[in-house]
Amino acid sequence: PSAQLLHDSLPVTGSGGSSSKGEEKVPANTGAEMKFQIPQPKVADSTVVSGSWLTDKAYVKSGVAEINGYDPDKGTRLWTIKLPGPVCEASTRTTDDNRTAVLFQPRMPPKNSSAGCTQVAAIDLAAGRKLWTKTVDYGGQPMNFSNVTVSADTVAVGGLTGGAAFDVATGKALWAPKEDDSCRDAGYGGGEKLVAALKCGAYGRRQLHIQTSDPRAGQAILWYKLVACVEYAAVVATNPLAVAAAAGCAPA
Image 1 (cartoon, rainbow, N blue to C red):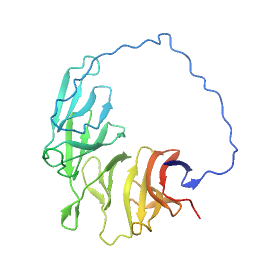
Image 2 (cartoon, rainbow, N blue to C red):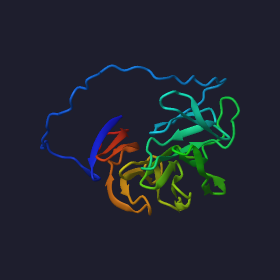
Image 3 (cartoon, rainbow, N blue to C red):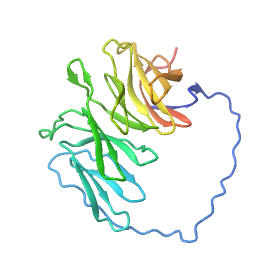
Image 4 (cartoon, one colour):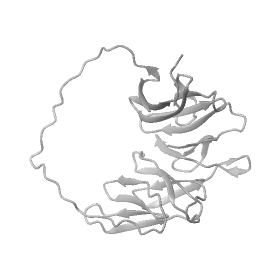
């Protein structure tokens, strides 16, 4: 795959610019020591345990169908949030008040299979509680998601059939895909900005767009069209904007 650097949804051209040397000072004590270790979960099958966050009150880590908060100094368990199924994906982003989001399966799946990543939940990392759980109906079935992030006070989730978003505090739906959409939000990058990777058209004739969006309305602010032969792309960073693209052919 190749990486393409974008700034404000426009391609970077030319070789101008300037740089300056860093002025970081070496700390008086450069040594480090391990405070504690959390034992690896015992499982009979391959299991995803995505999600690791640190607040001023807790180190939080997902386990098998649960999320645990630990004392950041002692490593003792402070709280546990039980889930009906394993965590599929977890946002690396949080709000200013330590709220984040995860995707998880609705139940424990049979061995070597999945029950679908249809559940999205907001987690209060400071209080150690689940704020809400939501699903999105598409064609009479709950949507499967493969990507989740947080930007401002919005939880955004994306997948093959499109993207949806919720208010992080209340779970209020902000937008959801429609079956007749010509373009679908396949995934998002969060943080200071919300950036969507959109797929437009049918497979083999697909056109990808990278779009900086309003995190409350989902409307486009700026957008950039990738070359026609790119079938897959992912948002690496949002400020400055960086996108990784898997190019299947050379542009004409």
